[in-house]
Amino acid sequence: MARSRASVRIEIDYAGIGRLAKGDELRADLQRRAERVRAAAQAAAPEMNEGAIEVDASTRVGRDRVRGIVVARHPGVLYAEAEHRFLGRAIDAAGNA
Image (cartoon, rainbow, N blue to C red; front, side, top):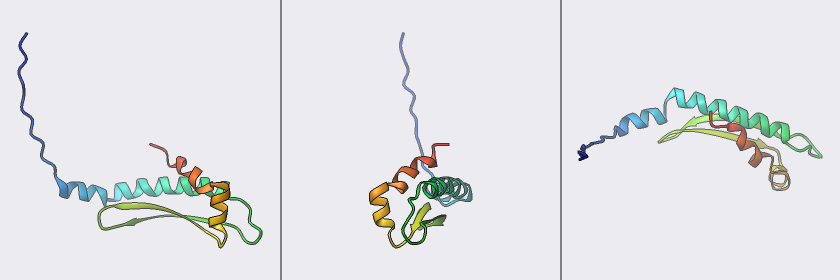
């Protein structure tokens, strides 16, 4: 049986991709994911001798795309992360859905 070869041409709408990458729908999704990571990190944050680790989540629109950001604040947070990896492990909470 002979097969015919079809020719396919794909045109990429880069401006459309840019609008999606900066759009409100993606921003809402990233905010939801960042909040899940924040909650997991806050729950796993170790107790500190003075004060508590505060974890915040936000989104920002950059030059090319929206970014989800999770930040832990405390003078000893670098030590706490190195010792307990509470932020690194929390990233799985973002999920795939």
